[in-house]
Structures are given as C-alpha cells and as structure tokens.
Image (cartoon, rainbow, N blue to C red; front, side):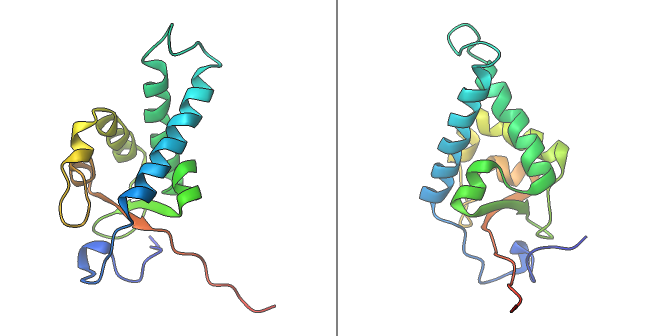
Length: 136
C-alpha cells in the first residue's frame, strides 16, 4: 500500500496534528451536508436519528475509500491509519463515525489530539499533503 506520508504518524517524532479549529470546521461542514441530505428522506423533526445515520454512512464511505470527508477536504485534513499512514478502510471508518456520534470519545484526547474514537480505530487526523506539481 502506498502511503501519502514518508514516515507514518506513529513513527514520526515531529508529527504535528492539525488544530482543533480545522477539525471542528470539518465536522460542522460534514454535519450541515448530512442535514441537507437527510432532508431528502424526511426532516430531522420527523426522523431525529436520520442525520446521525447519514453522518456515520458518510464517514464510512469517504474515510474508508478516500481518507477525507468533504469537510476534511475543505479544511485540508485527512484521517489516516496511525501505524502506516494509509487509508483506514470501510469497517474502521464506519466504527469511527459511530463512535464520533457518541460525542464523548472525541473529547478524550491524547498528546497527538487522537480522541478515543481515533485510538479505538487505529486512526489519526493529519494535515493533508498536497501532491507535488511537476513543471510544465
């Protein structure tokens, strides 16, 4: 598996996680998108768990396949595997989304700003690296 990082976050002594502001901005963006999507199936008043389910599915799909949700893309952060810096896969992404919706796990962070939901799924939020441009 090709990783976007030369050194995985777990073995990088200089790893600096993104700010909480960028993480929160990504979450708010994703939540607004989930509210918009869930309105196609019924409003949050009629089906209060529908936006939460959409958020879990969004995290499962986007993190599992692309390592970024739309909100993470906008704020230039990624969710990668702690040990190798690659994608976390669909199952761990769904679990991470479900744990995120419990609210408490994200509040229990370590020195790398890895919430309990990140530690349980073996993931970390990292700054998205931009691909190197080749001169034309």
